[in-house]
Amino acid sequence: MAKNWPRSGYVVLGIVVGAAAMAAMLSMPMVDPPGAAPLAQIDDSGRSVETFRVSAQDILAVTHDGGGATPLFPQAIQQIKDPALSGSEVVTMKVRNAQGTIIGVGARYVAIGHDPAARDTYWTLVLTLRGTLAAHCAPSAPDQCGAVVGGTDEFAAFRGRMMETSENGGYRLVLTSEGRME
Amino acid sequence: MIFLKNTLLFLGGVILGAALLATGLYYFPFPHAARTERILPAFEASAKAPEIFRYMLSDQTDGDVISLVTSGAPAIFPMMPATDRVLSEPNVKDGLALINKMRDDGGNIVAIATELESGHEGSRLIKGKVMTHTTWTVIAPGRGALFLYQEEDNWTLFKRFVLPGLLFNKSWQGSWKNLNTLGPRPDGYGQVIGGTGEFAGKRGHFIEFAELRDFSPGKQLAGTMELRVVFDE
Image (cartoon, each protein chain N blue to C red):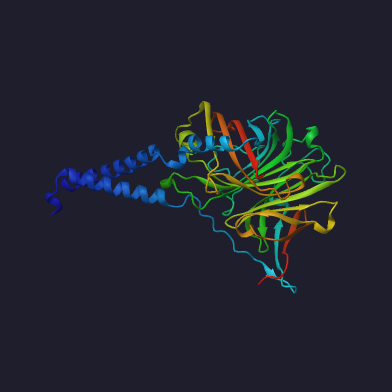
């Protein structure tokens, strides 16, 4: 039967097949991260506890005014010299879950807070397919240190704290929910 | 011989069909691609006195951009400063980590900020969407911290500048203004998700607005980026 097709029939068939193939290709997700399920555990008080880790090799950039505890990285990075930002320090990093899988990016900030005599610490984590989490620690309110002050998606309604510990040139972060998990 | 001719005709049709669809997609007027003309005037009309945080995009090592890290692929935006520590792992390869200084409307440096991105699962070329989940953290010493979240779409940037740059190494200079924000609010704005100090407890919305002035493959973008934040009364 194909033998009897006019030549234009093959061209038209090709156009349809080519357009369909291109449409199928362009319909594929451009972004297809595997994501990682939460590895939270429930402690004896019924609170959800999840640990994140940042190794020294996960640090992407470190900048400050020269007075920061961590060396500038990469070496050629711009130092913060502006008077308005005096005392500020920012570190960007990759973030791992407790099993060591990289699950997102994050940043740690130190800056003069509401009290001009003290420097507050802030964290922002952006966990792929899970959402954003923001935390704050002010020396003037130690009982509120690490309070989660904002979030999206999985963390939009989260109430709790994220406490940091320095660990081998990186950080260990423990996120604990407030109250008992049902 | 006839079989060979018919096969060539078919293959020619396949290439033509694919090219026609790609061309149609390139020129298709996706409604969200016209949001700068639609949403920006509405924002400006409703926002009486937005707080402006602005920074200059450039490749100057002492400019407002302090650090920029991506996956490095495609290698069209260089890392700043150069580094081999990149976002190459599966969960972060579509992400971005930027540190920059922020200026107020008068051009004074008033804050330090980060833009952290992860790839958006809704990105589809067939829908004209090249999206990210974007979180801005603006730390204003003495005032507090402001945490902002938006869904961002870079379809027009991709097709008009990145694609020609990748395919033909094409540069561009001029003035192109674009609203990058595409939600998540139904009105198309991003949202304030948290704050401390004078921003504590505040709710509101914002947009990210950019003016691109120079796109050259292998160099940083040049232009201006602005966050316009409106707090609920």
